[in-house]
Length: 331
Image (cartoon, rainbow, N blue to C red):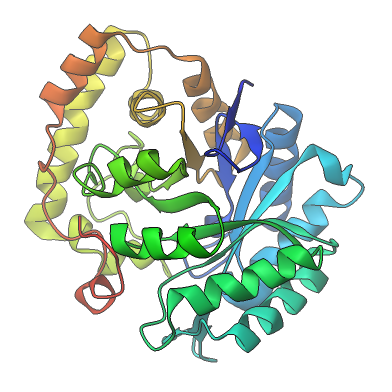
């Protein structure tokens, strides 16, 4: 596994990271704890060093799962990226964001205990709190860096202006945001801003939450699968977007690759400052995804992929309407 450095000030991590959200219930349906832990072990053994989680993923369950999977591993052999600030209710409902400095420190204290570590490598607000200046939130993380509990500041799902304001308080290592062949809204303004300031990008949703995996079929929703409420998977939108995937599959198979590998490799090919996060929940899906790290796409390859799925081709918002207003950029 090759390495990439997140921005001018961030850590050096594996070319691909592991997104752990789907390993907890309430996201994509039922989960298998043993298989999840085995998948984390397999990722680490294959050279993946960056593991991404959030303190609100299944209300702390995800962090405790990661802690179990990392038990006995040398702390210097992996990096933890943790999102905080999303409020949840006992019925798993979302209740907005909390970016107050005192809340930052509270969330961090709980995450350190659940993860069983003495520091977090990249700590980031999951969403912008409209009631709290981003300068205050980042300032609180900076205090935790000075105290030794955090190594780097990250951001998530914010726009160019917020990035600039945050970076003026403390250097930002990376922005985590959705980026894939189906979600390219960051290209006009956000991505150039990151590169101007020397900030890296960790891209989630690189397979469009399964639309570009090559395995999902229309209406294939397990109980508890949040995609049942996603506009991109609904009705005619889902049919249209699956047709885009099939066009990409033709390109992939002509090259002896899977559609998932080609979709991941496309994201990685957009710049050495980009680290795709792979949301594999099983060892089988992980094994399929990892070869994308070594796949080098030529200009001709990229042109064929662009023809199969042009920018803006996807139908439907990437989140339900109630969540779109919390995003710094759209689709």
